[in-house]
Length: 244
Image 1 (tube, rainbow, N blue to C red):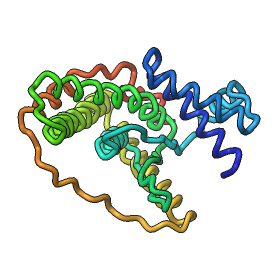
Image 2: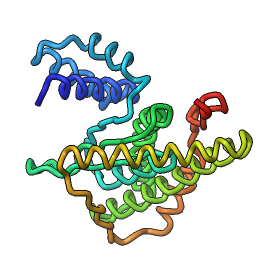
Image 3: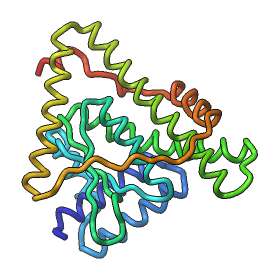
Image 4: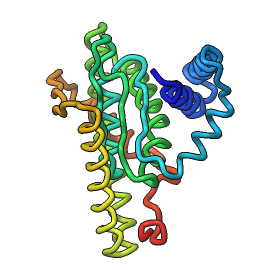
């Protein structure tokens, strides 16, 4: 693995630490970032500054999925990316850490929105599903898992709908040019992904569908929570940015 790969890993850990500030996960990510920097004689501040300088033209973002419920994390990332005109690729490896890394492709303005939203909403989804299962009589490990995965499915679906509708509303206010620009952005993201696949010699396959039983009430509760999330400043950039 090249030093650039390690720099990117450190940057991702620092991003996650910032997104999860004040939580055990945030503290752990920060410790890992500094340990990795020390191991390869890299300055975390230099890594952060260089990444910030490069971010204006960044078209690819790598995020390491950690913890439990990785399929649900992948689904959330895919929903956010798709709603924001980006594309996601998961690379399988022979190391046993299948699909631990997600690669998001998109034009810079949309990629920045994915980078801002996913860590925050992923943490929200994990905490919300855990709270729901604890408060709704989970009988055993299997029942707990069904409640949590169902809640997360509903949450992810609503997040997608909310983001997509927000962009559609803003694009309608801006005018037809904005809608055309968004189609162009989605096409650019698709090309970025396929170019990466071709250059890396990878084979592109669709992911497997999860056939696990769904709890309708848990899914509905997650969906309702997804409709209430605060998008902050993640809404569509205004006309002058879209026409660039």
